Amino acid sequence: MINLIWLMMILIGFVFAAVNGKIEVVTQAAFDGAATGVTVCFGLISVLVFWMGMMKMAEDAGLLGRIAKLLGPVVGFLFPDVPKNHPAMGYILSNMSANLLGLGNAATPMGIKAMQQLQELNPDKQTASPAMCTLLALNTASITIIPTTLIAIRLNYHSANATEIVGTTLMATIIATLAAIMADRWYRNRTLRRSPRISKSGNPGMKG
Amino acid sequence: MLTFINWISVWAIPVIIAFVPLYAFTKKVPVYESFVDGAKDGFSTAISIIPHLVGMMVAISVFRASGALDFVIQFFTPLVSWMGVPGEVLPLGILRPLTGTGSLAFTTDLIKTYGPDSMIGRMASTIQGSTDTTLYVLTVYFGAVGIRNGRYALKVGLFSDVVGFIAALAICLIVFG
Image (cartoon, rainbow over all chains, first blue to last red; front, side):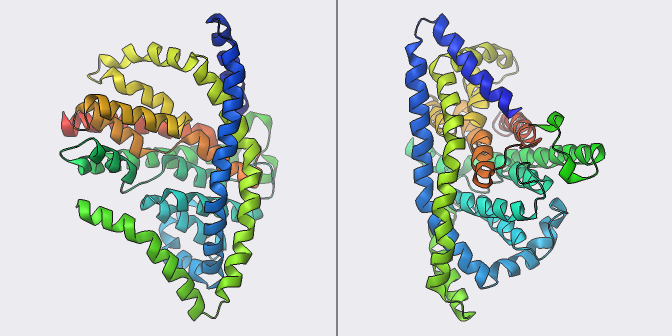
């Protein structure tokens, strides 16, 4: 599915630019996009280096293990394939907590660390495991209690009540997250039914 | 309420930065060495994301700059207007999963034009705050570990975006309507 979306965005863009008689826009946009991609990754370097150092300390001190033991039962049902005391569980929980608190630049490194831990449990290194898909679903829906950026923007434009959207945002994010969890479950069960052995399930029909 | 929220967002990271090393120290972890050991993976991880993000950003950039995105938005806008939903917020539903900076800029513009306390301003704030940029999250998270086949993850992400978008509109109509 990702292959098709990617190809369509480029091809449709090409056709529109050609029809509108401004084909040179495609060249400019392609290199601008490439530059943005690199800039974003460079911005991630400092954040990733810093938080991965912090998380390593937390792991060495057994802090992640304790968090996993404490809160693991709460979210354990979402990740049935991850062993209870595996460090991945600690990273998953820190990623979820950072999302909840709206700490965007801490949430990404923790999520990436969690992915790396899940990759160690993954039998097929090129295909996402069900646990990885669940973690991704939680992050795309992103459960946020406090949308700090938006409150700041609203204050900036003299809102009479900048925080009135906290309640509506929370409700919408909970519904989106529940939808993600349910869809993830549905697809996971369907995949498992079609091919009982996880390592064999990388057939083309499953690509997405 | 607002002071409490500000208080949390100001204190959370400093507290983590002080607490984690202190806790590790009491557990006899060589804190500095442990930090450096973990941190050295950060660079290679960031670099490994580059090809994935460049590929995705090129496609999105071409799609936007060619005017194709504007066409899609114009095509869909009349479809929702009849439900009492202002057509102005619809582009957000399409922009939100594709580009985080793009949709934030659009939201800011709506708030600036119509005011933060208008229905459009409230809806835009709710939509922007309630979900994350699916394509970016997928690219970065799977890119960092070299996953090529994301299976059903993209479908799940986009499905929850649609549900979240509709929920945000409905909730705003009920609460502020």
